[in-house]
Image (tube, rainbow, N blue to C red; front, side, top):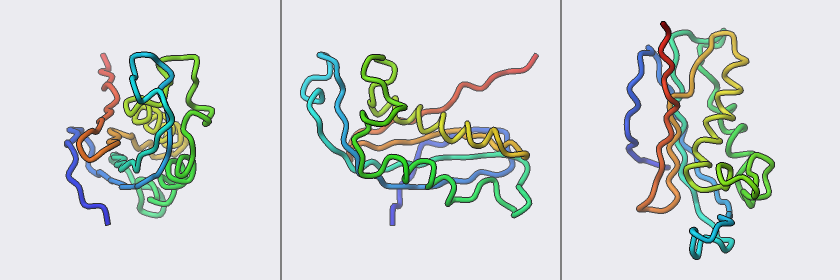
Length: 145
């Protein structure tokens, strides 16, 4: 069982759901600045997705945990990330660095959440690449008015 503490994301919602996952995947960063990370190598990534909202669906969920697993784990586990269509070797903003992996997971989750009638929000994605290195992606909050 994964038992970790993550940086908190402050939000105004009543409910908060967290889903932990572990995926094994390989990647490389096709840029001279990446040093030895230019070569293909693998990690066991620990991922936490935080979803929040004020309303629950007809089943009493913000989102079913299994749906988050399908969207992330089933898509990326035991793959070479660079071979997934969401990562583009020609665009440095899409090289599968830990930062880009975290942002991409957010985008995948939020795109799905936007289809739900009760409109929950993904408020953060935590991706630990190694025991000593992690990224926290939080979308910018848009202020109305």
